[in-house]
Length: 280
Image (cartoon, rainbow, N blue to C red; front, side):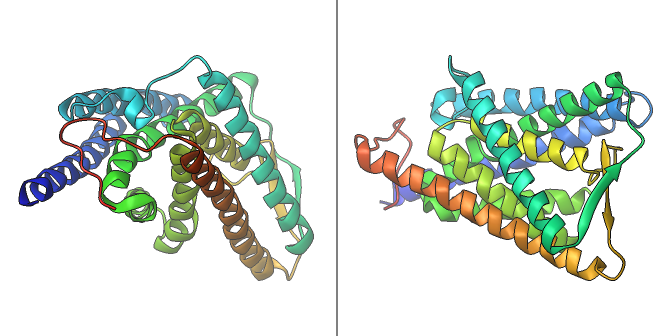
């Protein structure tokens, strides 16, 4: 029993080391001289950080005696289709959020100064790689390893807290990191666990970021910008937060049901290597 405990905590230590290494890679790539701030810089940093996170995943998976598919990081023949499903689902979520905010928060969107086609392409690709990097760094190897030791919700809570802390380190206010990033992490993580891969969560994550950009909620100029009716600024903010929480909670519940159904309908889960121990 003591040997098992030591092995478990060594594995947890590796997860923490992986998270720290991914943060270091992001910091390193962000400090590289990749040109003036703008869409091209964001794309370059996101691409390099994605490569770094994938390389770390390969390294740590081999260290643990596992395979990439054991942590959902191995592309499969249906990965593009699953990504498309996740992207469509993410667009539905953000469209629903926009509708409720418009009706209950007295918000409407007006055209903004349109970016050029090349600028828009750089922004869209940059957000795709940012989503890929964050899913690899949080909801692949670390989430799936922690799930083995702490269960679904223990792992989810741990990763969501670290995800929020990274956003705080990146300049987000604490409240926004908790209500925004942490809850988003719970959805992306549940999608990763339910589908046993990263294609769907990457699709959802990318769709939400791109949708936020389109409606003017990102630093880069999108196609529209929000306009709130006079006197409803507070109401719009409250509706936006609580609608986001409600929509995310429903989506999390849907993926949790998917996960439960898959577990009940499949064969018993077996350890994936000699040094993996499951805590019931």
